[in-house]
Image 1 (tube, each protein chain N blue to C red):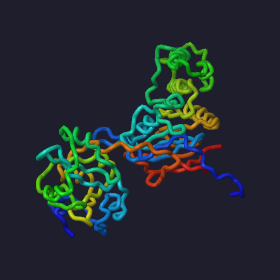
Image 2 (tube, rainbow over the protein chains, first blue to last red):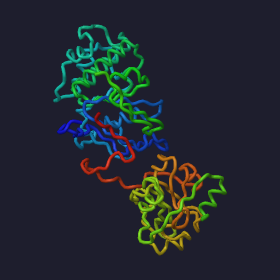
Image 3 (cartoon, chains in turn blue, green):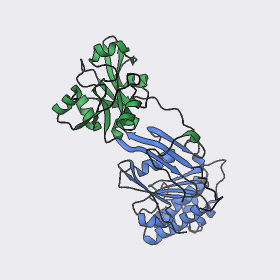
Image 4 (spheres, rainbow over the protein chains, first blue to last red):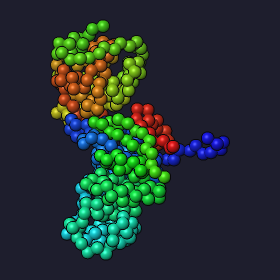
Length: 226
Length: 177
């Protein structure tokens, strides 16, 4: 390292400290400790039931840990920082009877007093034509996923939590999604996503965290395409 | 040294390991024991005898680095309140001296409540029934042998400030490349 080069480690955007989540006598997460740096993409891997979605939901503030501590954005709880966090669940949470623009207008109305990107603009961001008059029920899975992502992006979150964003997508649609996420990462947004398809996320994965039975089995650097 | 606890587990066909350590009579804390047996304190469970009133006794087994929440224990055990048994009563009631109390082979089979975090680990350490000897056993086996119930029994820790937090000791920390 050259003399005088900064060695400062950026302040983590989120920190989990020995986080455990118990559902009765089932331990979904066991003492997970992770720091998330800004502008990085973290890919969560693991078999079904490994704790990926639980971890995401705790970061999103939708679940509270049974034990341990979670802080985001300079010591806030996820609940306090909800407006800076975007969470895309495995289920689409969109209305099939509405068009994409109508869906987004509705969801934007749920954030009164908060600056939201215009629905038309956010649809363009995710590569969808806002002029489409088809209802969501007639969309392909890839288009639905991108609309879901657009919904998450409406209030301009800094931390994106995506539960299986490539689910049921063909390779081409998944590639489009990856390209979108690469752009957000370049814009210094932090992404945490779960997937069963490691190879799809590889081009944007700064870190790959594998969970097994609620524990961190490995935490390895990825090899993202720059 | 084979202790009562070890004999009872053997009788049940439960696998365990005995670990001996040097006793410091001035420091019988679970944290100290954890350091000596080389396990994180949250995996070294301490056995506390509590009372809900005359003739009502309950064992609470909690992580070495945690503090018992008496309200939570009382609720779990169906008692109006709970408090520690005085030190001088421990041996007459259990047959074991402080620092060597185990739920196994106590004078009476008092109900046992174990903190719910016990299931987070592959192995826990509990006193074997004598100072200087710990039993290392799988949580499920311990719960079965002790006929114990699990519940949230500990006080929530105070929020930790990031600047002073020792992090990554047992976990994982993303680093900049």
